[in-house]
Length: 215
Image (cartoon, rainbow, N blue to C red; front, side, top):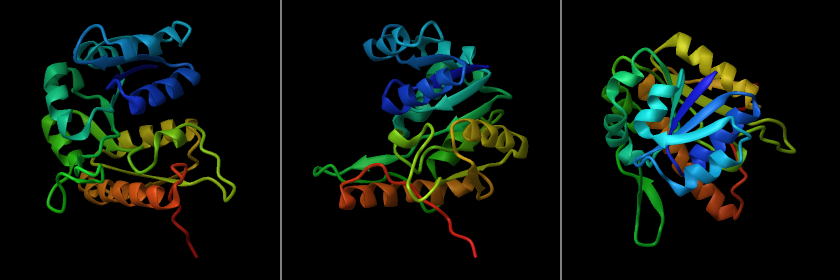
């Protein structure tokens, strides 16, 4: 499978490495054709990874991933070309973070909308599924916890797309996937990111994740 990832940071490269480890071809996209971070990543993939612009990555992928800085995602989508997203499953790993002078994150938008909803509106013919946004990048691929596997929360409007993403998540080592409904569920999942960040800081441990317990 060909995977196009918009982004050049650690979220993008970590997800890209996970897909490569599973045997997929991956192209990372950034604003410029040459980006030292994405080029360095590609050189370490034994030919399975490549790098280019946002448009290159969006045109390349059969599955697309949004791994850009949250509030800049719509600009990245427009640079990539909205038509490149048409009909495709798009994994949205973004969070609309705003940072105080002390570096403490909060949500730039929320309550009545979410980054997930904004992204879906920007690519109306795509099938967006929010995933990977409630855990740190260190746990994206094959997370291991003494208490057992954590849960991955997802949401999106297209049932078929969510089934596809569930399969990808299981390949990544997430056997328990919890679907919270339509893309408006991003409001809660993006807030859950803030809870994750605050918990990680208080615990001084960024290898933490959530588990929904059942009776």
